[in-house]
Image (cartoon, rainbow, N blue to C red; front, top):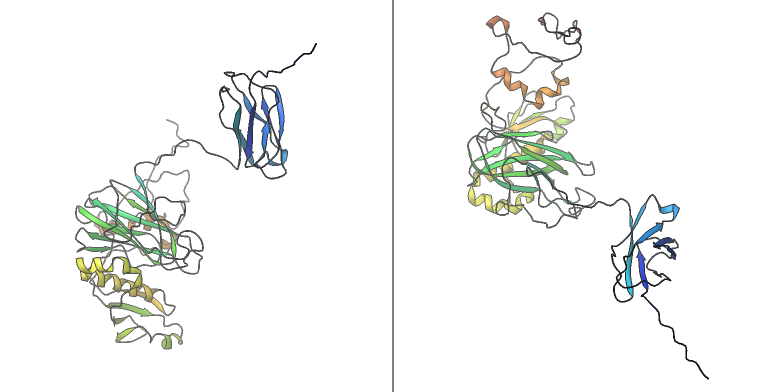
Length: 420
């Protein structure tokens, strides 16, 4: 008598692979009560016990090597129910560092420059000309990047090239104030100086924030209309924040009027060192009334700048005068950066304004920040004219014998000692 013995397996096998864990490391994966040792890297694993079709699967990472627990997170990709066949694609993924899941939303009042130095930015859309100006809407805060020359930064998208110009198009209201803050991100070899220019829709009216080197740039819009906003890296490289504030009646007038002479600069040389006399000659122009004891007027030829090449032809077509004024401003900037120059400015008609003679005014940074000097053109609070200005200061103490306060204090209210 002979017998034939056959074995019929009930259920199906479960297997998978691990990725992302360093070589020579192991972790443990659990399925219900079963535990299997899993090799690192791209190795595979298989559970011994079979599972019936339709059974709920509970597969988890049981243990990560102690050396990597603080640095790695290992997860099993979701597997809910056993199919009617062997399951071979259970995936265990190990990720170095923290992970973030979900969606990130930025406020609708924030806009990013469409061609920053970040290599991860997609899509990259150039905004280097009037034609490619990036549209912005409503009241916005714009974050961006500009660089004057090749190699202004050592890494990123513009490590081997430059991005000197960013253009934006928008509608602006009269008395709106544009504020440009800049932070250097270069190698420190050159000062990062970002300029703020505004043109009307036809490119005719050029408004300039200032001719100063570095610092905060401000500009007040004169009339309601559509404008191009131009952020330009005069030197160095870095990030900037452009804020467009709400319009306010009586807003202070920031900015340099564009009615200055083309191809001219007013330069005051440093007369403290006699050696500067020999260095003052190669200025690229003719000097009127050369005298180290006072400012001199310099006439120079308009020279094209390669950094304006992207939009030069556009602006020359729209308004050649605006283009020449830009080149004039760049020459003034060059003079300002010379070691033998104390001061350089454009040649224009200016109006005097009141200034404080307080010897400590340079230590009071808040005055410039809020343009407090503009208030002196309205009133100085001179007691002789009956225009005393009383200012309420909320503080928890006061040095009454300080030179700033002697004879200027009036009775106030003590919120600390008086509780009623």
